[in-house]
Amino acid sequence: MSATLTDISSTDTTGTLLRMATAGSVDDGKSTLVGRLLHDSKSVLTDQLAAVERVSKEKGLGIVDLALLTDGLRAEREQGITIDVAYRYFATAKRTFVLADCPGHVQYTRNTVTGSSTADVLVLLVDVRKGVLEQTRRHLAVAALLRVPHLVFAVNKIDLVDFDLARFDAVAAEIAEVAAGLGIEDVRCVPVSALLGDNIVDRSERTPWYDGPSMLELLEALPSGTPVEAEPFRFPVQLTIRPQAAALDPQYAEYRGYAGQIASGVVRVGDRVTVLPLGRRTTVAGIDDAGAELSEAFAPMSVTLRLADEVDITRGELIAGAVDAPTPTCEVDGLVCWLSDQALRPGSRVLLKHTTRTVQGIVKEIKGRLDLDTLGPVEAEALTLNDIGRVTIRLAAPIVAEDYGTSRRTGAFLLVDPQMGSTLAAGMIRPGPAIDDFEAETLNWSI
Image (cartoon, rainbow, N blue to C red; front, side, top):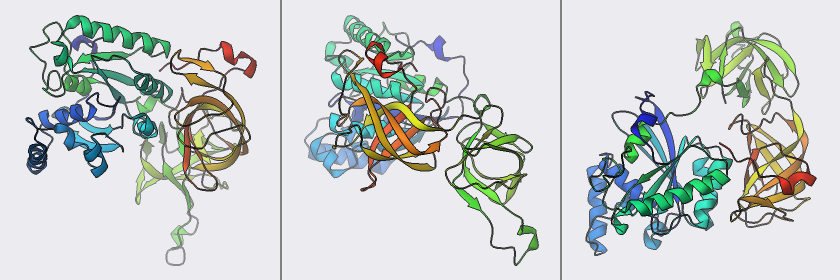
């Protein structure tokens, strides 16, 4: 369970970007860990540190409260908890980081889903004295659902148990058991003291029994994402462009391009593509990027594609590689993290937002929800706030959906309230068994 330097030393990540998120139960010391990471990696400006030192002194604290570096909202500072996702950017000599500091309170689980949805690695904090709690299980389930590529457990407050190896091993074994129940295989544990800085940036002499990397060393060495060359080409169209300059310059009279951000893969001039859900095949005639012509483009670049044939394409349609194009569907079977105070029931009407396409839908079935104690599915007539469950949604128009296990971009969707416009749920398309087989299913949460 604990990481070793030989596990991570084979990949050169110098200069790469790593998107990371942090989560943990209330009072596990998450904000302190993030503050310590920023402070010890010398990513805090002098005036920021001076302000934190001043506030810490005003509170009568004997040490600098590094949690104040991340708890930016007034309500967060007053209550001593994290409420919203706080994004921080910092860099070391080896790589650049985008850090999403997510709330730990159960009330703000929806924010944890938001912060983890684009993360390459999720750092989960566990108080070594308490071990795995229900909220830890919930965060693990969210990480498994969202297919976060790497999970790192910071077993925090190791100083409060006198740096005891036996206690660390007991917590690591508990983590391994819960992770295995969710189908998660790649989990690394690091014993840390966020308050004192042990094993955060530098390896601590007070844990001689731990031969793995520090937290920062591990984060610097983890690979980020899947190589774009290995992904299928997917391009959700955001806008059809027909310049109005034809009257001034005749060369633009025949111009027609399709703008958007490449969701995955690589596209080159001359590639055969399929426009979905129409199914029309054509060839990429040109790739434009802010007026410059490119021979190829790759995710996550925002470009304009020109096609060899005239095809009627509007916002929400998808341009995909002709060889491996997915099949459009009017029915979605997937897992959702319910984020609303109002319950989801069969017959509920929703808007489903998938890539750049939004369609009307109706909840056909609720097949069950995840029991966080047994990590298995149980029957459910409705989904309430923070529930994780499987649903089937019938759509008024087709979408080009793919299994979330194959693609995090084209396998994800949002459910939106059609009247209020508020987000109801984050969903992952995961084709599952028939209703009759659901009770026997051990949901495939594998990363």
